Image 1 (cartoon, rainbow, N blue to C red):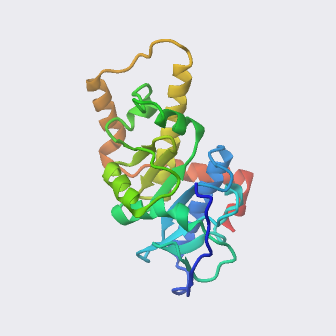
Image 2 (tube, rainbow, N blue to C red; image 1 turned 60 degrees about the vertical axis):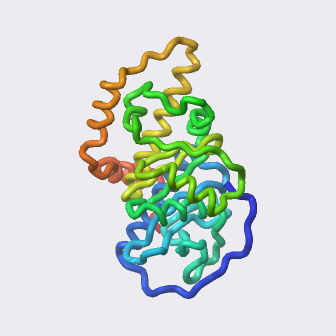
Image 3 (cartoon, one colour; image 1 turned 90 degrees about the vertical axis):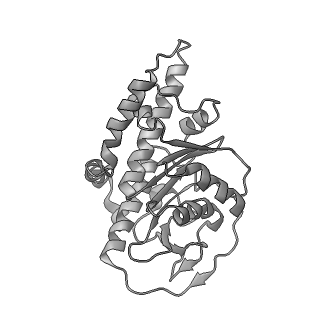
Length: 258
């Protein structure tokens, strides 16, 4: 979240849209709509960004001021790594908010899509000293694969960006203490499915802790074996789930494709 917003610098467009960019726009708009459907959004704040295929250093992001359920393929804004708008767009972007995403995109060649949310369960678990516990099969997906970054305040600086990506390393997900959740995917689908799994793991933990009973946790050997099984040899996640999720959206409202 960033409340500060300065006028965006605009740069001329780079050329006609490719079929790969159009598909990325559809997938990214779908991720925004699905996040809204699941009530993961936070007014007009937080972002999901995706790289533009074939255009190194160019990204797509939501128009600043629109709710997640208003995002569609055509109103996503193309920007560069500095948050400058590329081509014509009637909408501004939150360049300050993109700074966190820019740091991850720049540091990780595999971070095609970066998803950062302020969901309630994720923030609640991030505020717990021990973080995410191996209390569910969903949580075990992140056993040894979840990074943490301590809260440093509202303004995101280049120095903090360097610390954040150092903490993230090669992990697919992060809990930003007192702030929210972050996933980095090789596709939009992977970033979304990782986020859905992480949020459910956090929701399960919060609900289990509310029972005031001692939690039963698997031992380290079982946890490591399960995490390895769920990693599935490094296969890209979301390949099977994404078409089903798009069909669900299409039954509700196809305007995300516009």
